[in-house]
Amino acid sequence: MKPPVTIDASVFVNAFSPDEAGSDESAEFLARLRKDGVPILQPTLFFPEVIASIARKHDETEIALELSQELKKFPKLLLIDLDEDLADFASEIAAKHRLRGSDAVYAAVALRFGAELITLDKEQLLRLPKVLSVRKPK
Image 1 (tube, rainbow, N blue to C red):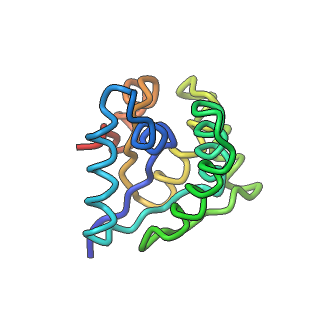
Image 2 (cartoon, rainbow, N blue to C red; image 1 turned 60 degrees about the vertical axis):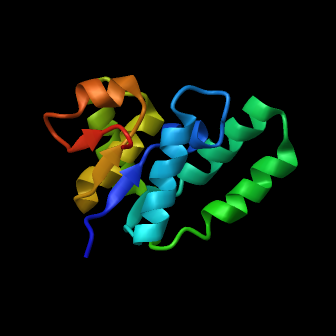
Image 3 (cartoon, rainbow, N blue to C red; image 1 turned 180 degrees about the vertical axis):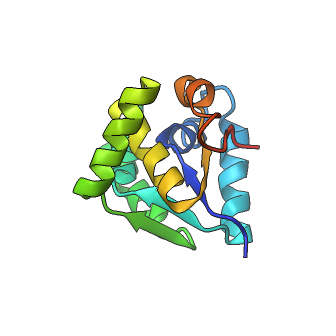
């Protein structure tokens, strides 16, 4: 079985924004995960974060909502509820590593479930390697 990954919203937004640098690489990475059936562990926060960003970036409500339905079809996608325990863990990570709240939630999911964090977020890439396997999509 392939090891699980947690994918920060930055990768999905980049993959669906062809005008951004690295969009092709992010899209290819996601396609490869889908094809290979890699387990993807995502906080439930992932849906509103990605969909809101796409709707705002492209000024397209319908496209963003259609993307939401497509994301739910990812094989081996497991959604992790942001319950009180995980929120407390994410808060601790945010405070210790000076991360934004949503970034800490992705890190908390990856840490809690032994997943590798895939991100384009510079702060996550810089501040988390001592506690978590974190890298850019490749």
